[in-house]
Image (tube, rainbow, N blue to C red; front, side, top):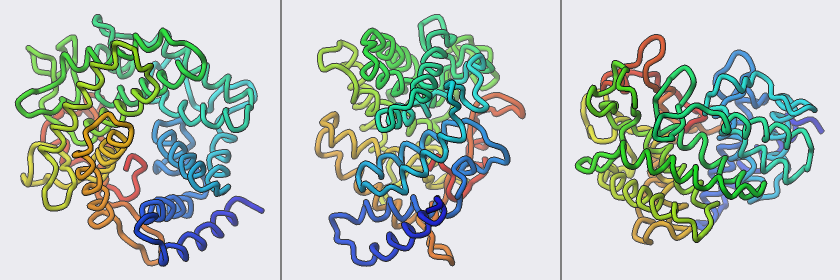
Length: 380
């Protein structure tokens, strides 16, 4: 049966089931409903990021990882088929990856390696292993600042972004376990230590989006090198990175203690800035209710993930479970819209935000709140 027919059948099944789900499985039901809605919108998986041409992106890594998680939870073949459809398009027999260029040294391109490791365990196809090792090779030579933290990209020299912690370190931690390279954990721990030592504001209790170790960027404070604002999704990337990477860490590794400190700081700061009415978080986290600011879906989704996974794995005190549940329920209540054809959409997602580049992004409050807002952006 063709994939789009499988998707349609799964779509009808899930929507019929949602009306009779109990309280205990309502979260799985909404996850399936969103996944099938995304498949219906994007029968070709590469189109999920509003692209006109296929491109190997971190966003595809997010979506394929999510679909594999649903497959593992439900054993519904449609989710695995969707992932395989994407992989078949991008991964050649020799392990080369369509549109990927190692020498770009773009840490965003590493994130999809996580779903490839999961797919390799399922299929044992050699091409996936070869592709995974191509990504690992990039990180062996990826440029770094003097303190040892990875540059975000070759085109952003000497810059450390919170985004990059998510793009690189969970992949490396999983690789360390799956392919027996335990010395990687020392390097991963270093990434968090450098970030924690340089990018945290103890008064606001949040981490800055970016740090230019060279102090050359227009957005960077000339003394500290830090960007001026606390962007919601940047904190979300960091939050997910910590609980995802730590999952793979050996219990006796000395670097665990610093990552746990980062987790504790994120939990305290995010709780302080969580909107008490909706349970959501703002695009600029500490500017509650300021003109132009809005409750943003990707930051809210990521921080809900952080709290729920952190509590489940014992990294966070059980008292933080309330923050995660309130956030997740807030997303469902305030950010999910039902369309005319019955599919659901995630609303109020910041489409993109970064630092520098062309046209130049100055990290000002006005910049963050005026970036495009989209429904169903895969980062949400």
